[in-house]
Length: 279
Image (tube, rainbow, N blue to C red):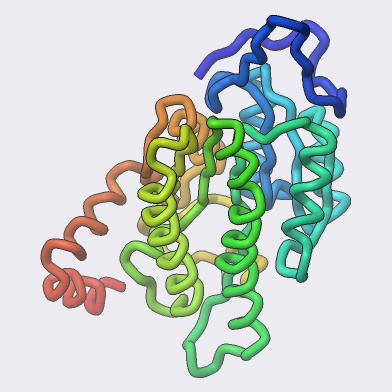
């Protein structure tokens, strides 16, 4: 995915480009530059994706996150517009979409990277954390996509990237609610893909394994397993951009993680025995 950067750098022009009489407006395909809204961009995968898109050149970015100082720092590094908001709050999806469209004029790409986690036995999980994980990881994503999609469909072009998790493909001990929410995101991606066929709008589901981000510390339980080892967050960002460029429906990071997901689908009994033994 390579582009020549604009000589003037990222544009902050909030007006959509209008065509002159007899001139057609060219809407860039996602992956070839354009406009993008990235959520969860104050740290982790979202911030890495924002930096990767900015490094490619040709992208005008709006970034969303809940940590205002961190979000503004990432926005300054990428020449993007920071749009801080808690997407779990009612109406935040409409406000964010409206602000992004006011600034960018259109949306060619949405990368839904906002997410939270919690680790521990389900019976000891606070009810408030259940609501937070389902609210942020699933409901906020669904509502935001529902708000953005009509604009992409009307334009006949666009791509939605949903950041999932291997926990949603195979289930992980001690992460029951997080795994359930991410499994729902995976099914949501499949359903959208079927519905949007022929509209010019694509859906990509990115499935990372363990990623070296602040996610584990923030969930309250650091990652302590010796295997699999966490991958750099930049590797996930590279995979996101490559998937957008090549119109890929689903990408595992690293790629070998597709194997346990396939084993679970083909031989669920065997997979469960192995998972119970090795975790």
